[in-house]
Image 1 (tube, helix red, strand yellow):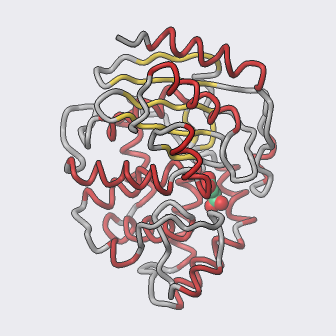
Image 2 (image 1 turned 135 degrees about the horizontal axis):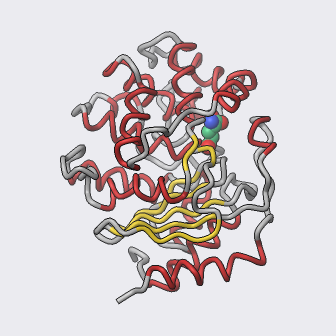
Length: 304
Ligand code: GLU
């Protein structure tokens, strides 16, 4: 029997000397303002208990972790059509890379690189009329916090500097792989990335996948098969171009964001979230990766 509270405390003890390591993302200027000397960790067990340590209540920028939940919403609309618009293979290149998209005729490698996520948001927008509103509604319900919101300063900062994302979206539009006008889809994409959320809140939301698609209120959002598919994509494509290293080192399906958060899912057991703003060269948080590595060693919950 694993004592999750004790495990969380040990994670903090291991990570403490490393807090502040890595470099905060500066390509989105608002993220560059975040104090790097912060660290939070939270585990939500499938029976609903949450154990957290450090800055577990401090909200950070969700960024790419939002892509897990937009994909869940698209699949919940029974939208197999999405798999004609985006593949399911690791990209082997940076999350915002353009060159592969040209070779592969506007079909992104997977839903977790930026191009793939823009397609998923575009699909959700076509399905619902309000991609951001759908995502925010889901996260509010799963975290139990109706005040979860978009940080408008970060969203504006993303939009002002989002030349690469615009280039990706226009290239896909040129190949006929956008349903909505580029600026409209990107507006939803920039704002979904700019939702702020704490480690404790995100761990609660991650239970959606640990419970194979069951929501906090007991209703079903995803079929167990779709939930498993999302988790498999987290393992193969979640931590950017370091997914192989993460599988080797941590052995848990994870999704990182450049805000410094990493969500890990242990099916049937828990969702764990670690957050530290300093990133490594791939865009993964240095302290969050160390925290999940430590958590895996303490619990033995690697899926391998
Ligand atoms: N909003 C970020 C971007 O589009 C997301 C990147 C990330 O977290 O990986 O560049």
